[in-house]
Length: 325
Image (cartoon, rainbow, N blue to C red; front, top):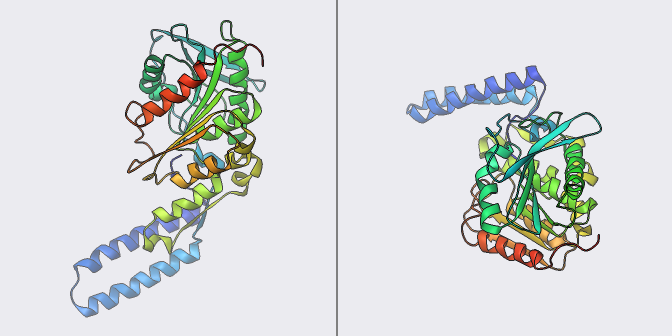
């Protein structure tokens, strides 16, 4: 989830941007001035610019569509050890991705990536995870991403995530596979939705959101003091639908849970991951804080994340194939 592309009414927002640029120039000039008369003159101009910006409307609404940044990157050719997957949806959208197959593994990880990532972008970490952990991995692009068609939304992508679990269990050779859903960033919401609507064997969340409205409001804290006086980000009411918030679903999920979250995350604060951990209904749950690590800096092939992943995967693999659901 990347806090960009903030929505607003076109004309007023354009005026606001112009005024902000004026203010930036004035700030720069003020740093170079030494004579009191110049300070006074530019201070007056600064006040006028701020007043104009206030008049243009400073509360900007972040809409659901602003959370998705579709990319069209796809893998070239058919990677070794993987097979293409296509999942048609009732509304004629088509979800396209890959199933990476490990040697005689009883565990399949269903992976949901970040909001600006395609399966092609995640391929190096997915291939590493499959080989290092000996797990199958099913990863499909969100609607509008990669080769998948359609328009993404939180609700639709959640429903697609459930369909992905169903499609896996209907795939020959995977009817008895243990299933772990893995969600990174906004994909954490899809993973929680899937785990809340289908019985799965494990849930792994990497820098996940607990509440979309709270995440949006947290971005205000990333603005410096000057811009906080001028612009306030607020979530669209549709983005605040309670039933779509991971925090509202996590309590019903009983499977083993691992949450990995860096304390230097300025996109989705670590407090979001902690809230999910504390609200989780799982008995077997683990929270792994990573000191000094930002949102896009979590290395799964480094300690302590690698050991944490190996532990939960080994625990679930030891259960053997599913006998009945």
